[in-house]
Image (cartoon, rainbow, N blue to C red; front, side, top):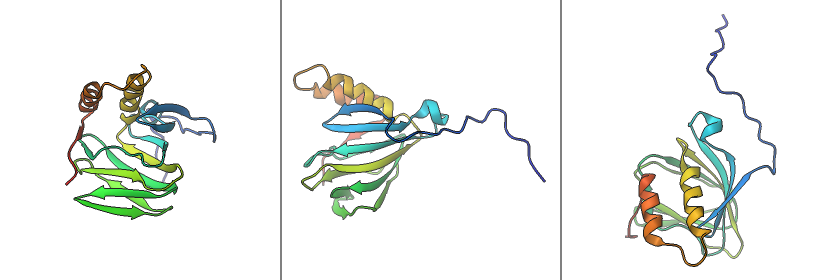
Length: 158
């Protein structure tokens, strides 16, 4: 009737509101809720804040699937040569290998909850944040190299 509880299971994580690790890069803020060390490397969960006009260049991931939930603001997502407006409450799934991006097309910050599976995106973002914290303009060649180290590659929009 009942099965034994696995002894190697990670603990249940309770994350109180307002207690996130903040990482800044590319003009965005990553409010990290859960990282791989807490989830057995299964996922990374964060709230992303993007300023008006912001958003990454078109790219694809070799390692992660991404799930976006628009919480506040005006989001526009790119996939297969087309842009689609996604309203508050809208959900976007970008499977690994898909060329995608998003933009904040509003005049207020865009807030999205993003989940990447498996984990690791937080480590990528933290390494990029180090580049941005050096002062002066970021070394774009270095950022492209860091991205490639994490299986993230940039492409020209069609």
